[in-house]
Every structure is written in structure tokens, then in C-alpha cells.
Length: 83
Image (cartoon, rainbow, N blue to C red; front, side):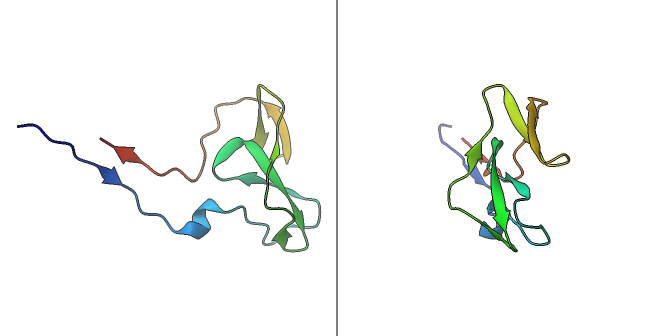
């Protein structure tokens, strides 16, 4: 039997957006789609549509709010597709 099966994980779009709720101006929050990027907050909202990038070999560490040496981060927003 020949065929292809696909598995999709349906996610809430909000889960894949940077969230500055409860953060002060200039706080940095992770990009849920990419561990090497982050956003800067303005009062209660993300200040730009485009994320900032860490240097090569670094990932954004949400605990200390800065880019650090890569530590094996996994994005929080991942759409799984299996074939």
C-alpha cells in the first residue's frame, strides 16, 4: 500500500506571537518562532514588527533577557508536519 499521511498540529495564532503583557518598556521578550531572535517591548506591547537577532552562535535567554551562548533552546511555537 502506497500513500502519504500528514499530521498537523493546529495552534492558536496568539501562541506564535511575542507577548509583552506585564513587561516594562525596553524589556526583551523571546521570539516564539526562533530562539536566536527577540523583540523589545514598549508599554504593554511589542515595539516593532521585526525581531532583533542575536549574534552568530547565540540564543536569546528569556531568564536573563539577553543573548547568550547557544544552550539548545527549543522554539515555543512549532508547527509539526509529518509525512
